[in-house]
Length: 113
Length: 114
Figure (cartoon, rainbow over the protein chains, first blue to last red):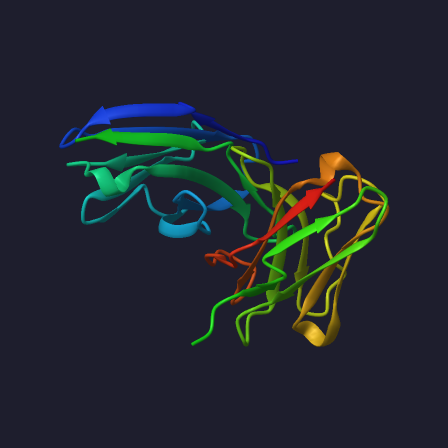
């Protein structure tokens, strides 16, 4: 079955710096890769997603890149702000057959003011 | 419109008791997922339902766990003979269809087994 590895588990950056979180997946049939942000005590919320037919997607300060050959994808946050502090989860989902979504273990991001 | 609703928000029970957790998905969403999140940990897949298809139960940790989805809408996750290691937040999510669509999460049920 699908397995998703996420690194680093903890990331601390200075306000204004960039943050990068990386994930790898095992099942080459996976074709949908969402990223979720979970603030303390809150529900996970989608921040960006990418499908396997594109290599990069941007939304303001957030971007995601996908390398299907290497089976890895990354989240990039530029000009980080204290409110970006949260746990970020990557996930991989098969688009056909099995629809199960497997999540990475999460990255706890601290943005220091 | 209304989001995913879960009840109860908190549940404290004694070891050995059965518990039922409820999830009311967004209206019209055909896919429904249950996850378990232990303190400070990631999201552990438990089960998902898609329309009238047989559910994928491959994530259920033991036969004490079961789930139903009645009428393609509300779902109930049941844990029988609860153990202390069952203590966690149980999250439900729904999506408009299972293929390549984002999941919308509820606030979860925090389950504590004494």
